[in-house]
Length: 575
Image 1: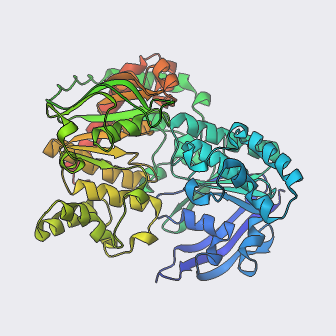
Image 2: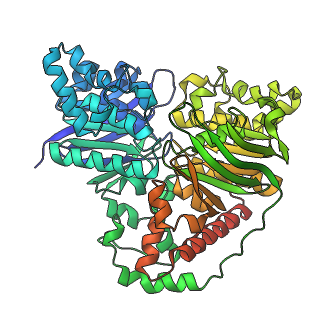
């Protein structure tokens, strides 16, 4: 019998600032060497559960505790955060909030400096840990200059010196491109196996975490444990969508073909599926539906022609880039971190201007337009919500953009209420912005821009930090803006699910260049493009290939099926 390292017994917790308990009657034991996924939608209590384990509750976030929680045999209420940090190392969702050093090397060395480790000994330890996490070539780099994946590697390196027994990862995939997400899951898996660590992963992106095996999945919602089971048993059930979690794409595709599962089907690993058992049903479902015709393009709103731009003389962020954005389109701009996606968005919005080439808005060179003028036509929701938030109260933040554009107060109030309701923020309209989670802050910034109803809305990673329920609500609302008002939507995203389900066309960036511009099902079935752009091959491609179906046509079929299901749901009174 393995040794228990985390033991919740009849555990409940209420934050000091709240009347109701966030966690209710938690009974959970996690054993040494296990890899456990704590799964749940935003606001489910999963992060609170993690903060109880690492000691942030009650020592940073005060509140009332009932019951018992032991970590490595220590009753957490009787310990302190320093003691618990020697047993549990945490990598936060927001890596920037975890950095304390001015260089990668300094940040990794921080805990050693606190322990007064001699410099001669410290250098060797830092180099060794940097090698383990693959950052040995970046010891002199600024942490804030790194990609999302590199930042997470540095944060992981910083907690490895104490030789903690348990590693806790709070939404480690939130800021990563698909290929880097696979790398992060690989790294976690390798460290767990090589060092025998107990690993806890707090996430809602189930399919991405299951890229590597996990022992157990703890499904949390409404502050309670809904299910404690194996991945295979969880995927056999229909409980995921009911709890705001997206099913893996291949599971949804198989269910759409009328297939029902039984435990022991090895559903958590697509490579282990019994395709001979499913093939006939998948092919029959595919052949029963006529594929939709391509939607004709509208007039050009934005024309980017042979544009180049560099933040410094050594390297261009954009190199001879050309593409158009037409009225009524839904476009995904995809590619690895640092490929030029966000730079292209800033260029369209006029935040930066071309060093060569030309950008036209509604047929006119935009160089004579101010950022404010462009902002009335093109709205931009930034990736990091903290860079956009100004006001202290949520409703004031959402109304600020409209106020600055001269809207009457009555219209500001009307639009503010509408977008707050659609973004599931109305009940929190009088809350301070500072108490919100990362995902909630994202929704506020989206609501602020949606209030202006511009011709084009560019959303930089809109689904980062969003669970499936809120993701679906926001995306359905954005779909409505596109469908009912003809607003053009451009997503800059790492989320291949978003690209497949909600966009018609993908523009792909790699190494500062635009390497593809085509309908989404062609782009995401092209292995060469996927590899060059650091994307992750969707499981639909694997499913199609194993069933003898052309992947491009199968993704097209899946997109049509999902769209039909959403439209039917909307007609029945859904979002």
